[in-house]
Length: 125
Image 1 (tube, rainbow, N blue to C red):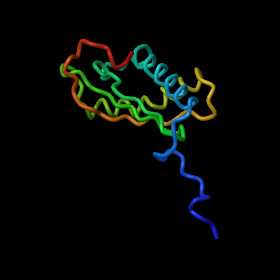
Image 2: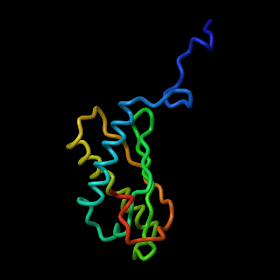
Image 3: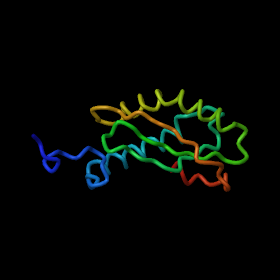
Image 4: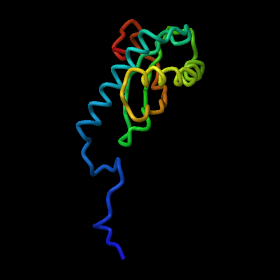
């Protein structure tokens, strides 16, 4: 018989504090993904896309990337989403080359809405 008190809590439960290593890895990944968005992705359908949120899951297997689209962008949100999903393999391969991680997280993109000020590059920096 096992007591529920002796059971180990699941990773990512709301009771566990986030480790310093997790925060360092998340920060490094955010910087590298931002640089890749700015410098390596040259698809014209991604013009006006800005990273707005970034979250690494506690187990380190998935990155949730929220993005906004400039209101004057010629691409539709659906077209941008499809382009980002297709580019995720390239982004992961570039992250694997730059980082010394056991596994490179999967990328999951979420459209957050249209950006009111399309001239600012705040999210991708």
